[in-house]
Image (cartoon, rainbow, N blue to C red; front, side, top):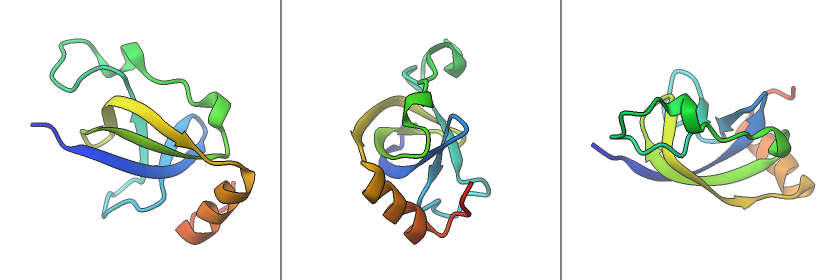
Length: 94
């Protein structure tokens, strides 16, 4: 079953840390282009987020818990907005 979402978070250590984790035990998720029903492993098409490290991004995809499948990056915040997202999210500074 698909759970389409649009979320925003900060990229830290190659993962997206959701700014509003919605009750998740771990607010970090990994992103993949692989559709949720595909036989292919999510890691096969994991998005490389290294160029977004420390920035806020918005992502659209299929929420599957630890992974967001069929993920696409919708927008990337600049340094000022990324700092605001970090402050408002309450996430500890790296």
